Image 1 (cartoon, rainbow, N blue to C red):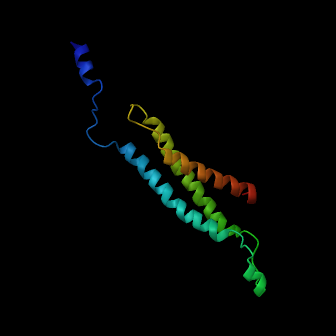
Image 2 (cartoon, one colour; image 1 turned 30 degrees about the horizontal axis):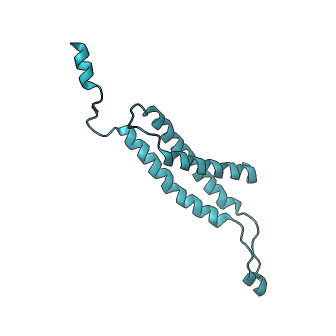
Length: 127
């Protein structure tokens, strides 16, 4: 009799509401991507200026060096993004129990982008 009860529950999803951990994983992904835009804008502000034809023609001086202070803010934002997306990946790895569950590819991508940014900063400027 207990075998019949077990067979009835196999294949049936008993989740009544959305899992709060899955919701938290989605929030981590959204916040990570939302923080990446300001980080990219800060990197754009910190990058060296490129001398153009008009700069040479008008005799304007351009700054060929990185703005380290601005890039440092982007570095800390990328660290935060890496921590958030890494936490989301850890929670996601605990939630892969059913065939319908999947790994969040967007968390892997944003973690990779932030990791590359952190490595670039450390390689270029150190701590």
